[in-house]
Amino acid sequence: MSKSRKIHIGWYIVSDYLAAIFSWIILYFTRRLLLSEPIFVHHRLFLNSRFWMGISLIPIGWLMFYGLVGSYHSLYKKSALNEYTMIFVCSLIGCTVLFFSIVINDPQTDYRYYYKAYFSFLISQAVLTMAGRWILLSLVRRQVREGLVSFPTLLVGTEPAAELIYHDSCRGLRTTGYQYVGYVPCDPSPTGDSGRWLPTVGTLAELESIIDERSIQLVVIAMEKTQKDRVERLVERLNQKDVEIKIIPDILDILSGSVRTSNVLGAVLTDIQTGLVPEWQQNIKRLLDVCVSVLGLVLLSPLLLYSAIRVKLSSRGPVLYSQERIGYKGHRFPIYKFRSMYEDAERNGPALSSAADDRITPWGKYMRKWRIDELPQLWNIIKGEMSLVGPRPEREYYVDQILEQTPYFRYLLNVKPGLTSWGMVQFGYAENVQEMIERMKYDLIYLENISLALDLKIMLHTLRTIFKGKGR
Image (cartoon, rainbow, N blue to C red):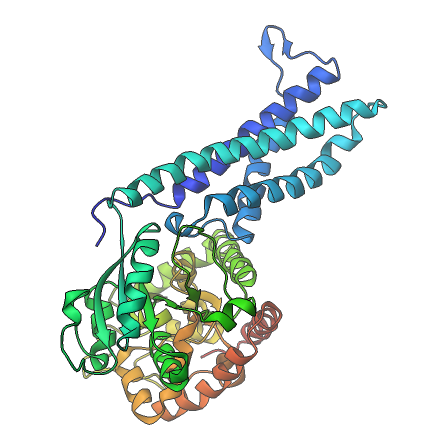
């Protein structure tokens, strides 16, 4: 467990934002100096409209750019060398685009002016961004080095491979903050002495509960490559949990180029990638989620206010309805909706709505027709609990019933649930568990073909459904 408060990734964003502001200020005054334009007018700094427009918009553009390339993940999983390389490349691209958009039209014929202006902008942007991140990463490394922050790690495997891998990887993992907290044998130890090097914390059947109880963040699989089927089954189980998975590579893995490492002092471990889409697409998807949701809440605020008033006047009870749903990797979260039913509509237990459901208020029927009741979920998207497109989240009560009939529903938990989905477009709302299973087939097809292009197509079909008033 962590012994010190972790540094939030938000400080990275603040650092980048300030660096972008100061680099723009440097470019602004550098241009004025090179063009022999006055810095002070009437004993005051001359700051024109272009200055204020740039200082308002350009830093936000930099943050969006850094977000697209995946800068704003956990500080504790970053390589300083990779960060500095990425900063230089991003600065080169971003400064070049801004330079040709803004500076190239300056009234100047001397090419040396453009070189000076460009390189002053590039150097200031890169150096200031690196400086801010270097300070934060130095604090992170100190926390990890002093053991103030650590990430619980579990070793799962068979002996003697497990003991060998433990000794080979323990020190390397510790340099990146991972600390072994226990061992789970795939087979009972014939000697029962694994506790000499790492305590046995449970059996393989208890793996999921051990991960939850001990807040495990990394699972290292220590099994022979000849046990391929067992490794695949184990990875499939771990894929349902929000943990990193690593395995020791063999010589063929290394020679084939499948082993990647960003920490030269860390353990030689291969990451098992469980993501369904490339990281850059995940970053773009998240950026679109946040931008569209924020824009939607702002533009639709009059409709949201009107709907809230109508809900309050329609019947007794709260305006917003919160209900626990099962989301990404089985995490529970409260989903928000405008209340469309009378109060205590489920006093007899969970019950799905139907087309002729007398529990729905008159205004609730209107909201459902145009799916207005779902709009508060834009806040769930901003919080990162949902996405614009993804399988619809269900309650645990129904998830358990679905899993009794088909285990494939677990695959839907490998992505964030969505405000809309391929299942909602093709099938619509489900009135019972069997219809949920039918709709699940469309969402499984979505997972097999997931892409930004498909997300866009689903959103367009959803808008068409809404404009036709075919919700429920």
